[in-house]
Length: 263
Image (tube, rainbow, N blue to C red; front, side, top):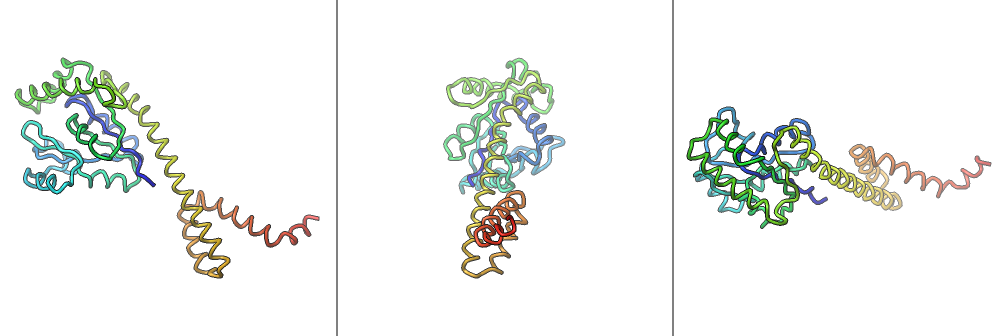
Protein backbone atom coordinates (compact mmCIF):
# COMPACT_ATOMS: atom_id res chain seq x y z
CA UNK A 1 0.00 0.00 0.00
CA UNK A 2 1.29 3.47 -0.80
CA UNK A 3 2.01 5.50 2.31
CA UNK A 4 -0.66 7.96 3.38
CA UNK A 5 0.18 11.53 2.38
CA UNK A 6 2.12 13.35 5.11
CA UNK A 7 0.97 16.73 6.40
CA UNK A 8 3.29 19.75 6.33
CA UNK A 9 2.58 22.48 8.88
CA UNK A 10 4.39 25.68 7.94
CA UNK A 11 4.36 29.22 9.23
CA UNK A 12 6.54 31.88 10.82
CA UNK A 13 8.34 31.25 14.07
CA UNK A 14 5.84 32.24 16.75
CA UNK A 15 2.76 31.42 14.69
CA UNK A 16 1.86 28.55 17.02
CA UNK A 17 2.79 25.55 14.85
CA UNK A 18 4.58 23.68 17.62
CA UNK A 19 1.77 24.28 20.12
CA UNK A 20 -0.82 22.96 17.66
CA UNK A 21 1.32 19.90 16.92
CA UNK A 22 1.65 19.14 20.64
CA UNK A 23 -2.12 19.36 21.13
CA UNK A 24 -2.66 17.12 18.12
CA UNK A 25 -0.17 14.51 19.30
CA UNK A 26 -1.64 14.45 22.80
CA UNK A 27 -5.15 13.82 21.49
CA UNK A 28 -4.36 11.53 18.54
CA UNK A 29 -1.05 9.93 19.43
CA UNK A 30 -2.02 6.64 17.76
CA UNK A 31 -3.14 8.33 14.54
CA UNK A 32 -0.48 10.93 13.85
CA UNK A 33 3.27 10.79 14.23
CA UNK A 34 5.58 13.78 14.49
CA UNK A 35 8.63 13.88 12.27
CA UNK A 36 11.35 15.14 14.59
CA UNK A 37 13.60 17.61 12.77
CA UNK A 38 17.34 18.04 13.17
CA UNK A 39 19.04 21.26 14.21
CA UNK A 40 22.48 22.50 15.11
CA UNK A 41 21.22 25.10 17.60
CA UNK A 42 21.51 24.59 21.33
CA UNK A 43 18.47 23.20 23.20
CA UNK A 44 16.22 25.71 24.93
CA UNK A 45 15.25 25.16 28.58
CA UNK A 46 12.90 22.17 28.81
CA UNK A 47 13.67 20.80 25.33
CA UNK A 48 14.72 17.16 25.02
CA UNK A 49 16.91 15.60 22.37
CA UNK A 50 14.80 13.40 20.10
CA UNK A 51 11.54 14.98 21.21
CA UNK A 52 11.45 18.62 20.09
CA UNK A 53 14.51 18.21 17.85
CA UNK A 54 17.46 15.97 17.20
CA UNK A 55 20.26 18.24 18.41
CA UNK A 56 23.42 17.52 16.41
CA UNK A 57 26.71 19.17 15.58
CA UNK A 58 27.05 21.25 12.44
CA UNK A 59 29.67 18.92 10.98
CA UNK A 60 27.49 15.85 11.52
CA UNK A 61 24.46 17.46 9.90
CA UNK A 62 26.43 18.82 6.94
CA UNK A 63 27.80 15.34 6.24
CA UNK A 64 24.28 13.85 6.37
CA UNK A 65 22.99 16.52 3.97
CA UNK A 66 25.85 15.81 1.56
CA UNK A 67 24.93 12.11 1.63
CA UNK A 68 21.38 13.00 0.55
CA UNK A 69 19.78 11.88 3.81
CA UNK A 70 17.58 14.98 4.18
CA UNK A 71 14.34 15.90 2.42
CA UNK A 72 14.91 19.56 3.20
CA UNK A 73 17.33 21.72 5.10
CA UNK A 74 17.85 25.42 5.64
CA UNK A 75 20.01 27.78 7.65
CA UNK A 76 18.51 30.38 9.95
CA UNK A 77 20.28 32.66 12.41
CA UNK A 78 23.49 30.73 11.93
CA UNK A 79 21.93 27.33 12.66
CA UNK A 80 20.96 24.49 10.35
CA UNK A 81 17.48 22.94 10.46
CA UNK A 82 16.22 20.01 8.43
CA UNK A 83 13.93 16.99 8.02
CA UNK A 84 15.60 13.65 7.42
CA UNK A 85 14.12 10.93 5.23
CA UNK A 86 14.68 8.49 8.07
CA UNK A 87 12.50 10.54 10.44
CA UNK A 88 9.57 10.48 8.00
CA UNK A 89 9.96 6.76 7.29
CA UNK A 90 10.02 5.99 11.01
CA UNK A 91 6.54 7.51 11.38
CA UNK A 92 5.13 5.87 8.23
CA UNK A 93 6.43 2.44 9.29
CA UNK A 94 4.24 2.73 12.38
CA UNK A 95 1.26 3.17 10.02
CA UNK A 96 0.67 6.72 11.24
CA UNK A 97 0.11 9.96 9.37
CA UNK A 98 3.37 11.90 9.41
CA UNK A 99 3.30 15.53 10.58
CA UNK A 100 6.17 17.80 9.52
CA UNK A 101 6.70 21.16 11.25
CA UNK A 102 8.87 23.21 8.89
CA UNK A 103 9.38 26.76 7.64
CA UNK A 104 8.71 28.14 4.16
CA UNK A 105 12.26 27.40 3.03
CA UNK A 106 11.58 23.78 3.88
CA UNK A 107 8.27 23.89 2.00
CA UNK A 108 10.06 25.03 -1.15
CA UNK A 109 12.53 22.16 -0.81
CA UNK A 110 9.79 19.58 -0.15
CA UNK A 111 7.95 20.70 -3.28
CA UNK A 112 10.98 19.56 -5.30
CA UNK A 113 10.69 16.01 -3.92
CA UNK A 114 8.15 13.22 -4.53
CA UNK A 115 6.84 13.29 -0.94
CA UNK A 116 3.49 14.81 -2.07
CA UNK A 117 2.23 16.04 1.31
CA UNK A 118 -0.77 18.17 2.21
CA UNK A 119 0.41 21.73 2.92
CA UNK A 120 -1.15 23.71 5.78
CA UNK A 121 -0.03 27.27 6.57
CA UNK A 122 -0.41 28.54 10.15
CA UNK A 123 -0.67 32.32 10.02
CA UNK A 124 -0.39 34.82 12.89
CA UNK A 125 -3.18 37.41 13.07
CA UNK A 126 -0.66 40.21 12.45
CA UNK A 127 3.05 40.99 12.52
CA UNK A 128 2.47 43.05 15.65
CA UNK A 129 0.98 40.06 17.45
CA UNK A 130 3.80 37.88 16.16
CA UNK A 131 6.41 40.26 17.58
CA UNK A 132 4.58 40.24 20.91
CA UNK A 133 4.70 36.43 21.01
CA UNK A 134 8.40 36.30 20.11
CA UNK A 135 9.29 38.80 22.82
CA UNK A 136 7.10 36.95 25.28
CA UNK A 137 9.24 33.82 24.93
CA UNK A 138 12.22 35.67 26.45
CA UNK A 139 14.57 33.20 24.75
CA UNK A 140 15.75 35.23 21.75
CA UNK A 141 18.09 38.19 21.46
CA UNK A 142 16.92 41.42 19.85
CA UNK A 143 18.91 40.54 16.75
CA UNK A 144 17.26 37.12 16.53
CA UNK A 145 13.77 38.62 16.96
CA UNK A 146 14.36 41.09 14.12
CA UNK A 147 15.61 38.27 11.87
CA UNK A 148 12.53 36.19 12.66
CA UNK A 149 10.22 39.12 11.92
CA UNK A 150 11.99 39.77 8.63
CA UNK A 151 11.67 36.10 7.68
CA UNK A 152 8.00 36.17 8.69
CA UNK A 153 7.27 38.96 6.21
CA UNK A 154 8.70 36.83 3.40
CA UNK A 155 6.79 33.75 4.55
CA UNK A 156 3.50 35.63 4.64
CA UNK A 157 4.13 36.98 1.14
CA UNK A 158 4.92 33.49 -0.12
CA UNK A 159 1.74 32.09 1.43
CA UNK A 160 -0.32 34.53 -0.64
CA UNK A 161 0.96 33.07 -3.91
CA UNK A 162 -1.40 30.81 -5.80
CA UNK A 163 -1.35 27.07 -5.03
CA UNK A 164 1.41 27.28 -2.43
CA UNK A 165 -0.73 25.81 0.37
CA UNK A 166 -3.79 23.57 0.43
CA UNK A 167 -5.16 25.16 3.60
CA UNK A 168 -4.52 28.33 5.61
CA UNK A 169 -5.40 28.78 9.27
CA UNK A 170 -5.17 32.10 11.11
CA UNK A 171 -4.10 31.44 14.68
CA UNK A 172 -5.71 34.35 16.51
CA UNK A 173 -7.34 31.99 19.02
CA UNK A 174 -5.61 28.70 19.86
CA UNK A 175 -8.75 26.62 20.44
CA UNK A 176 -10.38 27.92 17.25
CA UNK A 177 -7.23 27.30 15.20
CA UNK A 178 -6.93 23.80 16.63
CA UNK A 179 -10.55 23.02 15.74
CA UNK A 180 -9.91 24.19 12.17
CA UNK A 181 -6.77 22.07 11.96
CA UNK A 182 -8.68 18.99 13.14
CA UNK A 183 -11.32 19.59 10.47
CA UNK A 184 -8.60 19.69 7.81
CA UNK A 185 -6.92 16.54 9.08
CA UNK A 186 -10.20 14.67 9.44
CA UNK A 187 -10.24 14.15 5.66
CA UNK A 188 -6.67 12.85 5.79
CA UNK A 189 -7.69 10.36 8.48
CA UNK A 190 -10.62 9.13 6.38
CA UNK A 191 -8.32 8.48 3.42
CA UNK A 192 -5.87 6.72 5.73
CA UNK A 193 -8.57 4.46 7.19
CA UNK A 194 -9.96 3.56 3.77
CA UNK A 195 -6.48 2.78 2.51
CA UNK A 196 -5.69 0.51 5.45
CA UNK A 197 -8.99 -1.37 5.08
CA UNK A 198 -8.44 -1.84 1.35
CA UNK A 199 -4.93 -3.14 2.02
CA UNK A 200 -6.22 -5.68 4.53
CA UNK A 201 -8.92 -6.84 2.13
CA UNK A 202 -6.30 -7.33 -0.56
CA UNK A 203 -4.34 -9.55 1.80
CA UNK A 204 -7.50 -11.44 2.74
CA UNK A 205 -8.36 -12.28 -0.85
CA UNK A 206 -4.75 -13.23 -1.54
CA UNK A 207 -4.95 -15.66 1.38
CA UNK A 208 -8.20 -17.12 0.10
CA UNK A 209 -6.78 -17.66 -3.36
CA UNK A 210 -3.79 -19.39 -1.80
CA UNK A 211 -6.09 -21.55 0.29
CA UNK A 212 -8.25 -22.47 -2.67
CA UNK A 213 -5.26 -23.40 -4.83
CA UNK A 214 -3.52 -25.33 -2.07
CA UNK A 215 -6.64 -27.20 -1.03
CA UNK A 216 -7.14 -28.71 -4.45
CA UNK A 217 -3.42 -29.45 -4.77
CA UNK A 218 -3.59 -31.54 -1.57
CA UNK A 219 -1.28 -29.40 0.57
CA UNK A 220 -3.91 -29.16 3.25
CA UNK A 221 -1.77 -29.05 6.37
CA UNK A 222 0.60 -26.39 5.12
CA UNK A 223 -2.19 -24.37 3.58
CA UNK A 224 -4.34 -24.39 6.69
CA UNK A 225 -1.38 -23.39 8.83
CA UNK A 226 -0.80 -20.26 6.75
CA UNK A 227 -4.50 -19.62 6.40
CA UNK A 228 -5.19 -19.55 10.12
CA UNK A 229 -2.06 -17.46 10.68
CA UNK A 230 -3.64 -14.89 8.37
CA UNK A 231 -6.94 -15.39 10.16
CA UNK A 232 -5.42 -14.59 13.54
CA UNK A 233 -3.77 -11.44 12.22
CA UNK A 234 -6.71 -10.11 10.22
CA UNK A 235 -9.56 -11.56 12.23
CA UNK A 236 -12.10 -8.82 11.46
CA UNK A 237 -11.87 -9.43 7.73
CA UNK A 238 -10.62 -13.00 7.53
CA UNK A 239 -13.36 -14.39 9.73
CA UNK A 240 -15.95 -13.12 7.31
CA UNK A 241 -14.02 -14.28 4.24
CA UNK A 242 -13.44 -17.68 5.83
CA UNK A 243 -17.15 -18.06 6.37
CA UNK A 244 -17.88 -17.17 2.75
CA UNK A 245 -15.27 -19.53 1.41
CA UNK A 246 -16.36 -22.59 3.35
CA UNK A 247 -19.98 -21.71 2.69
CA UNK A 248 -19.30 -21.91 -1.06
CA UNK A 249 -17.25 -25.10 -0.74
CA UNK A 250 -19.85 -26.73 1.47
CA UNK A 251 -22.71 -26.09 -0.92
CA UNK A 252 -20.60 -27.07 -3.90
CA UNK A 253 -19.61 -30.49 -2.64
CA UNK A 254 -22.41 -31.32 -0.26
CA UNK A 255 -25.35 -29.91 -2.16
CA UNK A 256 -27.21 -33.19 -2.29
CA UNK A 257 -26.66 -33.76 1.40
CA UNK A 258 -28.07 -30.30 2.22
CA UNK A 259 -31.10 -30.71 -0.03
CA UNK A 260 -31.86 -34.06 1.56
CA UNK A 261 -32.09 -32.55 5.04
CA UNK A 262 -33.92 -29.45 3.84
CA UNK A 263 -36.71 -31.54 2.41
